[in-house]
Image (tube, rainbow, N blue to C red; front, side, top):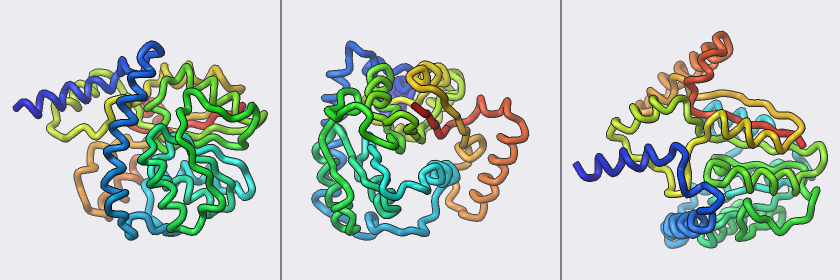
Length: 272
């Protein structure tokens, strides 16, 4: 029973996580670093080649496919991968010919990412650094793209927005795939479902209001919505069933735009 109520608290904390406020950023960064260093230990102790082996034809959920479709023509482009984690995005883009700089606040995860790049023979195209996306040491106008796969929601958007805009070249793009808060009451209902919250202590899904405020750092932006019904049926392992749900998701979201308010994920595209 204790675990159940503790899980409710963890889920509700993902709404307006107080650790992401400017005055708590130092504490958040410390907690996140410790959390992900611990996560990295299992990979450092046992590097599973099957998990890290690059597969060009890897089956991906629609939101991931769309995220990477916005990054198809990146050969020789300089890309910053924020909150790079284990380095999967960095490796995939390096395989497409991009020149990658990957940053993460966790030294442990950075080491895992280096191992990943070396294992997949792209280490010459990637430079991994331990660094916060909220305070970067890069020069202004350095990167053609800034990307992150579920990393932006771990950051203080006020600080990260200014930094990401600063390091982007004029006309450059920042592209993110992030979890979204549909409505607060839906999140409250979700907290009652006994499914473990996998979010880190300093994370938290993004609201439309937060994204709108973040967009003020850029000349224009576009939002693409995903996971309407798919979120509800993710407990199933039937590949055939999930494909049908994904197809229905796409049809409903595009035919009835008002349903976007109920989506649990979005791909965000910002242009400097």
